[in-house]
Image: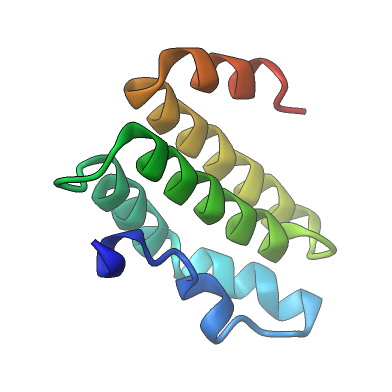
Length: 103
């Protein structure tokens, strides 16, 4: 459970330089998509634990996009939408609320 729910992978070697964050985000797209899948399909975890894990992943992705070049910010919002869609698969009401308020 801890290896699947550990979403701090983005923070471990996340570059401090904002311009490098966009490149880092692009390089780790497959990792992000795999993390979404792993969290959604995590065995023996409650809906709350999976939603929390996805929201932590979203926080990390948005932190990378914040202050980065425009392309990276757009990419981070794209992945927020994917994360919120994944949340709606396991908790329809929360996922809909998040998708409705995505800016």
